[in-house]
Every structure is written in structure tokens, then in C-alpha cells.
Figure 1 (cartoon, helix red, strand yellow):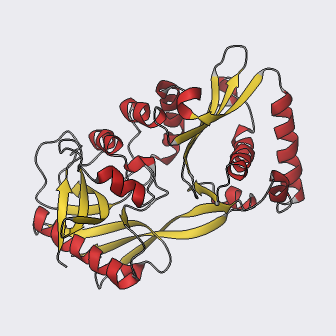
Figure 2: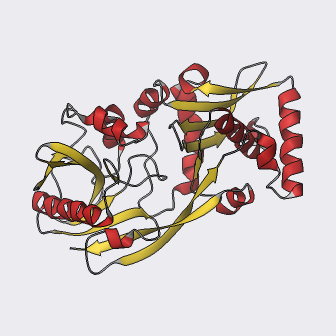
Length: 339
């Protein structure tokens, strides 16, 4: 069957009629919902193209990429495309996922054929001045699935994943170093008993506003400003759509007298492996509390176990701390492939 690409600019093009069915059937998180793709594309630092892979009009996968053109200061509001540049394949607004996925579980050779069809189609769309593709969040064994003969690999931060197959949080504690276990238990007890602090876990739309989430998210984003092609801060319209939906869980720490938000974790819900999207907290000198970061992991693990999840994708950054908490670190890299 011949492969065709339905190439979409989420800023302007309408949502395909089968997109939501495709997303949910493929088990993709809420960040791939089309209204969120549109909000992300308007805030992105480079134009975003979404390609739906189709065979005989049946959708078999999707690829999202930013167009890193040669002209400077070409943000999402720029009109027209650059004549040359790199195609940067990455998940929209979420470094814990890949920018490509398929329906079902195709064999390795079929995956390579589909991605080869994507590369050929995107090159026809953009022109010969577009000289390469950068594939992000490539796991061990996956370079062979990506088309191209010359591949330049750049190691990136590993992805932390914590399986939670237990019946209670004590099973998790038992795996940890004694000093870590004792400190987590003690702080969790103290925070729970603290009359000046509330700790709430539940649907984000019930616990936090988009403005509150944006403020704490911005604090966390500042830590990653020096990365190559850093993610743009998520805009308020994006967070309004994200937090207001049904697929995001929040862990919110508040000052009980004034209800001031002190710390916030947002989790993209999923039947098996929810993704910890972000953490943000006020600094102690600004009225925040010490040690909320690690207590947040206790609450996440408790929630994951009680919800019957297979595990948690803890994301990138703070790799050693996450390994000390029992997470497996999956090596990751960016792969540059000239065309």
C-alpha cells in the first residue's frame, strides 16, 4: 500500500475528523489532543507541522516536528516558510515522549518503512533546502528503525521510569536506601499533620487554575533555558485547555490559611503509564516549603498504586535523585540524519 502524508499546520488547519479516535486508539496522552496542538503551535519558537501517515486513507501513525529554518527570529507567527533548515521531530510540549507513533505495534521493518515514507514526503513538501532531520528521545535499539545511512548521535538526559506493581507504598519504601526511606516517611507524616499545609490530589480542573499552574511552571522552565532548542514556556491558553480537561491529575500543596499555591505537580493520566509533566514550587525565601519536591514523589507513588497503574514516567532531569527513588533510567539521544 502506498503511503500518503496529510500535512497540517495546527494553527490554521482544521482537525482531521478521525484525529481524536486515532490518538486514543494509539494510547497517546492528552498533549496530542488537537486543540492543545493548536495552542502549542501558536506559542512555539518555530513553525510546527503535524503529519498524519495514511495508507488508503486509513491513518496508521503521526509525526510532529518543528521547522528550524536558517533565518533568525522565525517564530510561529512568521508568515511563509524558510527555504532551508532542519526538521526537528519531537513531541509537542512534552520531553518524555517521542514525536512519532503508530497505530498498533508494527514490526521494526514496517516502522522504518513508514518513517522513510515520512522523510520522503516531508522533503517533497518543504523542498531540497531542508537538509536533515533531527529525531529526539531516541531509545537504545531505535536508531536502526530510523531511515538514513549517516546518523550523528548526541546523548541527552535519560528518561526515568518507575514501575509500581505493589499493593502499598511500604513495598516501594522497602526498596530504598534506609536514610532515604526514613526521610521520606518522616516528611510525609509531618506534612500530613501540619495544620498550616494542605496536600490535595485529584483532577487538575478541581484543584488549580491555569494562571496558578503557569506561574509555577514558569519557575521550572527557567532551569532549562540553556538547552539546545529549549521548549517555549507553555502559554496560558494552553494550560487553560490542559488543566480544564479530564486527563490531567494534580498534586497541589497550599498554605492552608491563605490557600496560596506552594507546589504543584501535573500528571498526564494514562491507563498504564501516566507521565509526570511538570513540577513547580515557590522557593523557601518566597514563602515556600523545603522538601516538597521529594514529598511529591511519595504522593505520586501512592496515587499510582491506588489507581492500579503499571508505573510512572518521571520524565527527564534530576536523574540521580530519581534513580535513588527506584526509577530505571532509560538512555536517550538525539539523532541527526542528513538527507
